[in-house]
Image (tube, rainbow, N blue to C red; front, side):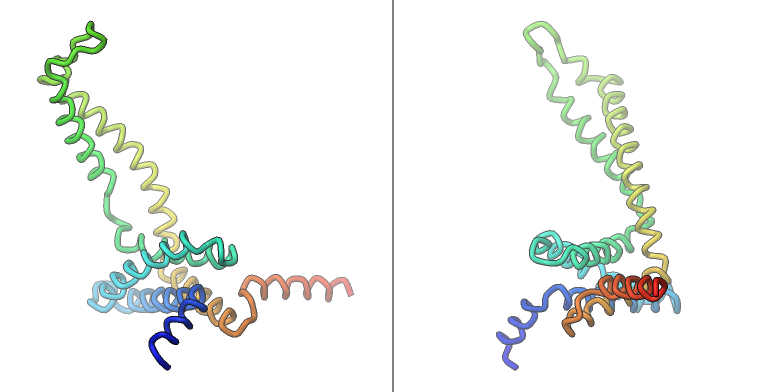
Length: 204
């Protein structure tokens, strides 16, 4: 098979290919973590998962209109899980707050000699403790806002990255990809069909 034919095949089967690779990575990461969470193999797989997760997220955002909703959601969910895993314990809030504090402190320096509406002298804002205090308040506000958002993201990130859940998510992705390759639709279609059959059998 030529390279062009392979590329055409990948393009024609892009969502299921992404699901298959993402699912395999999720399963491998879960297994490697369960065996040795400090091992080099686990860390390498986690880094590989991060890179592929970014690619998955990009594809889900740009191609979701041409894919089934359930496929797009499953790809986006797996991408989020793979991306957030290396950063579950990183405190981004304090980093963002310090950056904002530095930015505001520098920006206030430009207020020296500035007069607002030809009446209000803004020079005091560029000097001494007032300048430091405003920068600190701005940083504290951003910290609180980011902390709240970060807590929500990390909660779902840690929940989905619990290795048994990650393992199951990977299996679901692999099963979904397999059914799509074979032309049988989605795992969720199959589950819905079983529920309907059970309901009909109970009625009979």
